[in-house]
Length: 606
Ligand code: M6R
Image 1 (cartoon, rainbow, N blue to C red):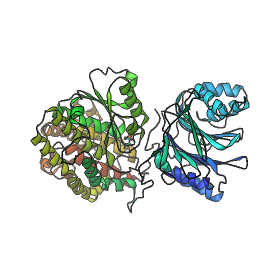
Image 2 (spheres, rainbow, N blue to C red; image 1 turned 180 degrees about the horizontal axis):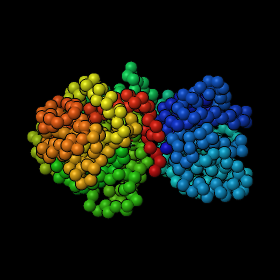
Image 3 (tube, helix red, strand yellow; image 1 turned 90 degrees about the vertical axis):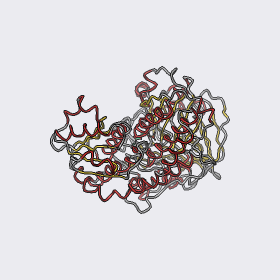
Image 4 (spheres, rainbow, N blue to C red; image 1 turned 90 degrees about the horizontal axis):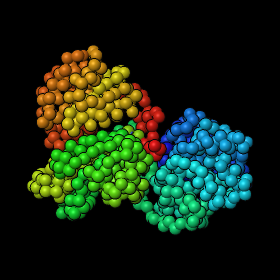
């Protein structure tokens, strides 16, 4: 996954493209580049590392021209190097930027190399530039050339090409990877999403899969893959905050942890109708039609689905299965037991989740998309949207989006249970009232930074850690371990506490940190016995719990407490200290908190 941008008709193309790339850095940040076309010459700047390095290169040597394309990369094929950074140029004639994977690139490259094409990178993407040169050499015009190339390439892509043969237009195409075309005043733009273009225009055309387009300063001509002209309406996208700043915090992640009371309150408001009832934004009839749910998500969003399964099955008595999105369609699932697919994604762009959702839809399931980014691909393609209103999440590690997802999922479980008659209006109102107390409770948990600091200092010395939980706190243990490993690079594993004795307990040795998540719920006594077994073998217990449960684990080495909370809400509240622990451990270790190594905020490759 990567971010691509382009502009045609803007006389300050270089700076405009750099600004657009800054808005896409969440998609990848290991190298970047911009190329413009000026007086028939292709002019290229690329830099390894964060965008600031490209900015420096451009400050040293500005790029002239009113047409150009740019890219921020998350390496898939070929290591991180300037040669592998995009844009790629072939024969000083065609330049391309690409997001996605050209799956049959080896075959195409071999064919082109044997025809004399010289490649400069190890990427799959470079074949696109050479394919355009080949097609133009064969006398094809831009439409015919693109049509031919789309017929040959396989895989997911959004790409833009700029050619000296067509100095006043960009050629773009998409399949599975997102692409937005922005219509400005006397100029047009392209970006991997509309946020990239928010400083330039709100008028956007979203290309459909297999579309391609020729874009000039004052015209956008869209075609289907077979060359048939296509009519794609422009839409006005919601005003986007575009680039947000750290607001005085040291990291976006710290800011986003602090934003959780608002994120939860706004998300809850989105699930509540004018009469103050939880509606899940769906009619009672639509909710009643749900007889089984397959949840599709990745990473932190997947752990949110695993927590929600407990709520939906307990309250609404509707069967739920949670699927890792990247596995779903490849195991040829039997879908007849489910009426509905619920795809959960902060970005609304994770390709694994999108493809899983499409697979479910093509199998006849209704789709619900729970997304944080309005207008994202999943939001546009799904039958119903459940919105989280967490606001832009910039830190690569998901925090406020996770607790907002959980808030919406619990509200959805209550609305579904009420519609199904498995809980009465009184019980629904009681749970709703408890959910409304969450912003305040989470606000109180935010005072834990100082008490957690010394615990994080000790944890930062560890090479490995375990996270344990039972019930809804088991998926939270998985999420806590993910936060620690992705931020601090400390190896961490989450387990169901009761599963320890079936094997993982062999990992415990003197001094191994064991982060224990505990609530005063129906499994507390059993969970605490499991922790005693870990402590007896030398595990250093770091207990994260509510005040009334502390006494259950009087053998803990360190204790972090949150206010008492109804057990339904416990995974939401206990997530906060787990996030703070991972954040402060990473700060202690001096890692790149907002942009950890090898990661990207939005993963748009399979
Ligand atoms: O945007 P999505 O919710 O679809 O993203 C899913 C995962 O890529 C994401 O949650 C990832 O695991 C985060 N780095 C976790 O902090």
